[in-house]
Image (cartoon, rainbow, N blue to C red; front, side, top):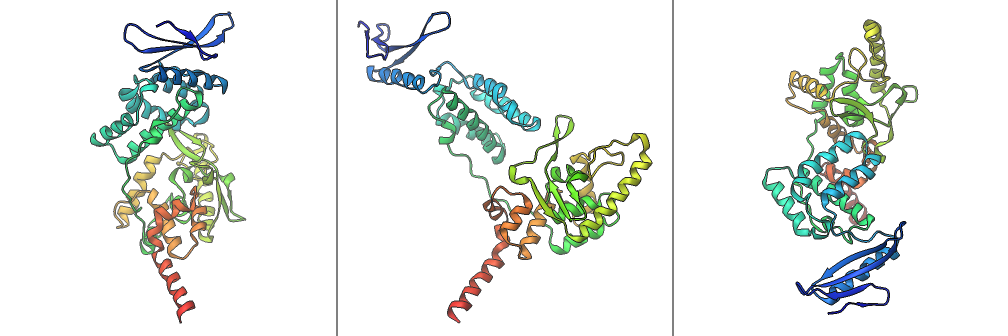
Length: 379
């Protein structure tokens, strides 16, 4: 069938070899005067026409015409090179790249974006779960894929994000383990006089993440005003420890210090001054509050081992430093500190996050609220 020109939409004809309808959209000329042309095809004339109109709509909106040849692997290459390396800190960038290299490229890397379906995403998640990966890991894989496809939509490579149309696996709810007040007091007694006493006391009293605590500098601590400001965190980048940004914007926060924490930090500062004199030229000036005996940052893995040994020696069993954060939240809520205040102290992005993680601790407060209403309305 002969082709024909259609009101600026390009030309369309039925291919004799396979019967498919082929359309050509003419998009102007390049800098050398060469005609720019975009070809589309469909099983029916209507399908080919619809694709032609889509090409022209995108061009009219200032977007590049869709390229059906772009694969997910090519998208990832461009996304990492032109976007992510400017947006993420090195440790986060490496985390994204690890997920892409180990999970997305081997499975869907050669798949053309135009052919990617919700079924492909669901199948990927199912295969990872069957292979024994944790739900949190599979959810992360889906999140990275979704973010890359969001970029493809912004660039005009795709009209929709199939990853957001899929459903991530449901994570089983796990309540963080917390020290009871009695156990916390046992811990405080066990670390009394310990070289890292101030670190453990500060983490327990303020609910700091390990990286936040290890990233606190003396500039962030005002012992007179009794305020500690969280503005950076110690992170691992490959084999190197680096100071980077905190987890979320809400993680940047100022926290009031209890009196005993101020006292233990004063003692720690004096101890650190003595260690600096003893180390002499071997001392590394980092400005950090919590360091090794020569002033270098404390490796998080060494912190985990040291803290577990302290807990074992105290008869508390195995504990992880992050559980000090859970313990701080649990004790504050049990003592009646309002949920929004606890969320602010912890640096949570929303009160809902705090309620989801620690809602089980609020049962006594909810019961007290019910009794208060009962007394007010029916007594």
